[in-house]
Image 1 (cartoon, rainbow, N blue to C red):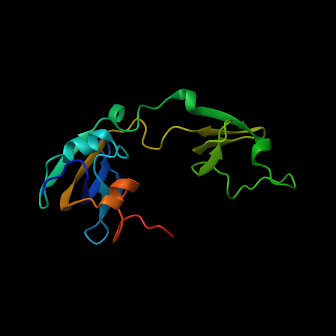
Image 2 (spheres, rainbow, N blue to C red; image 1 turned 180 degrees about the horizontal axis):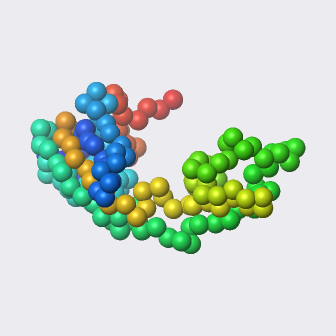
Image 3 (cartoon, helix red, strand yellow; image 1 turned 45 degrees about the vertical axis):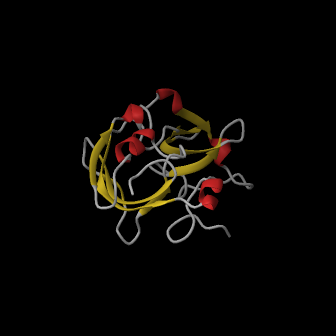
Length: 169
């Protein structure tokens, strides 16, 4: 069976940054990445590169930043007032909020987002709300482990069920 819309695919891959070779994510044969193909939940270029492959096939491809997580945008850098980080007693947690830490935040409309702390001053915390992989070209290298037809339930829910898949609690 080949990878196509409405198939469940298991892959083992190494994802690295094209420029530095730094590992971003690595799966294993014991803990593969299992997904329902063609539902729009993944990078379009990732799926394009796997289309029509079958179990045992290998892959090795690049996705440029503009087709991955976009380019870095200076508009997503923000100085967040210190007040936003104070607890009920007006204390600032220096251990939790320091340069390099990524914090869950909420935008003005209440949407969740993540920001990485770039700088802490007495009046504000400078944060970067770009996706951590924005501006990076990605290199995927791996192997297709299994391809099977999705069940009616998986198609109705839009995700994988069963071993290594999504579980409802």
